[in-house]
Image (cartoon, rainbow, N blue to C red; front, side, top):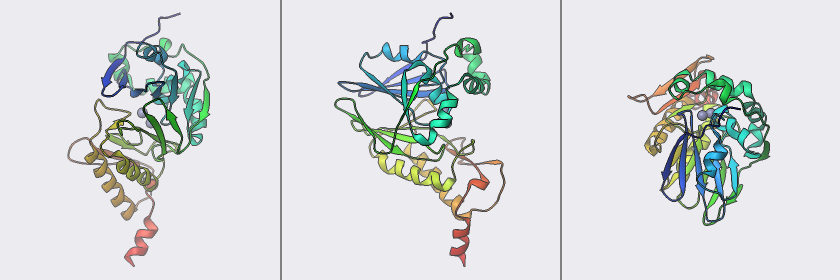
Length: 274
Ligand SMILES: [Zn+2]
Ligand SMILES: [Zn+2]
């Protein structure tokens, strides 16, 4: 049996929140209340995330998953049960399996190399956690703070955003990141994403956007910019290509990656022109 890895980047943020960055693959967030703690996303499963959490807090832990991609739910193999939205449950199940976790590692060779991540050690843990239902409006009282659940489909059909009542921080998974991506299999239309994205921006208030990828909180102006581009796309709504297209500002980020045939609202835009 190879030794279990726990050497990930642990960054304490304010007010009992930690950012757990698993080898640049993904950000998970640990939120601690006076009675309980919760882990938002479980990572890719390379590190023993349960042991990492234990080294920070021994409070009873609930594991909440933002969406069913292997970098967010792969690490669920280290826990007896996790919560995920029913629309993402089926793909969530497959993303805990070794072949999906292996595919994720395969597609990130540079990060794998720089952090000396080996396939064999990473996939040694093979366990099927119970997947419990997580729905819009569900709340998790940690003591002194409550984690609220909002359904924000787009990146996947069952993508959810969590809000921490103490700080107002939003945990957006991949639905809102510096690179918003809607072109993966089961990605939703730009129009569908827009609804959740506007909701996220409205909810953000004084809180930070704690995103699934990148080292810092995402500036809200970036989200506002991507929402503007998405609105333009929906209004134009032309084209029927299956190729991924990107809209971005002068720099690399923020950007929106989408499939052109995933833009909807074309007929309505045409009607408006008449
Ligand atoms: Zn994702
Ligand atoms: Zn991700």
